[in-house]
Amino acid sequence: MLIGLIIIGGEAIMSYKGLNLRKEVKKVIHLVLHAIALILGIIGIYAAFKYHNESAIVNLYSLHSWLGIAVISLYGIQWLYGFVIFFYPGGSTGLRSESLPWHVLFGLFVYILAVANAAIGFLEKLTFLENSGLAKYGSEALLVNFTAVITILYGAFVIFSVASQGPAEDDYSYSAI
Image (cartoon, rainbow, N blue to C red):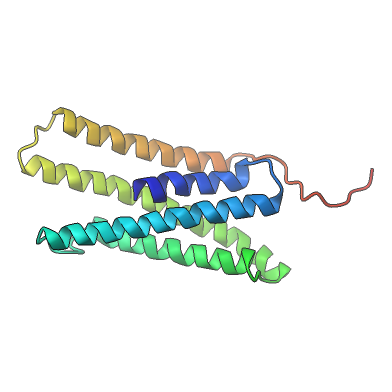
């Protein structure tokens, strides 16, 4: 889930604004990377349920699991909406221009929620490990905390990079000399 929703999802967000390519190419890259992230997120949730069921651990008992279901659901809705409105069959020009700011805002909200949920997941896992005898300052605890900090910093980098000024849009349309 970390690789899918956080890393590849972050790359998908940055690819649309950061790549100096034609708009149609950026849309396809953005769409495909988000599809890969969504598929990996779904596989991750399936793996979590499978592990819980095989280990006799109750499902959906924590804030992390509730937010995880919300994140994957919102991510899927966002992807489907973006596919239908901006890719195929594509909405009218007016609908696309009215939807774009909301698509961006909602996408960033879901991404921030995914990063926050990953941080909660690291905390939950560390708590379970410490309750089973892991040393509070052991190498495993430091690794989990370090990974959580790097995840949060990466998420912040993604948000800051898309909030900054990107390359000028060039739709390769006709313009007077």
